[in-house]
Length: 150
Image (cartoon, rainbow, N blue to C red; front, side, top):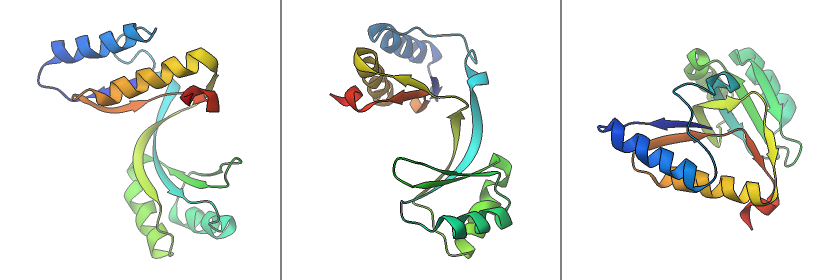
């Protein structure tokens, strides 16, 4: 996990984040210790049912790096470099494809399947971190199964 914080009191924020990790069975690494597992990307997400061929053609012309079709629901993500995000977004909108969600985010290179009790602990940890006032974003490489929300 990467926890992105913005604070006026670093000591308080570190203590709050460390407490959340310890409470739910994790531990807080040093600054940047898992950064190599994630890549900063621009992501434009389109709902299931959007024409894959048309999206692909428009994305290539817009300068996108990759197109990912999710097998579970057929939703489509258009991926690009953060520097090209505004250009790709504008080109996709001009082509008539308004994304359901568009953001610059951190994506894990490899997801890790987490199941059972461990998955439930991860969900609780993610929820706790999101509740903290100084936490801006939480990025995770956990691929949670349906039993995680039981």
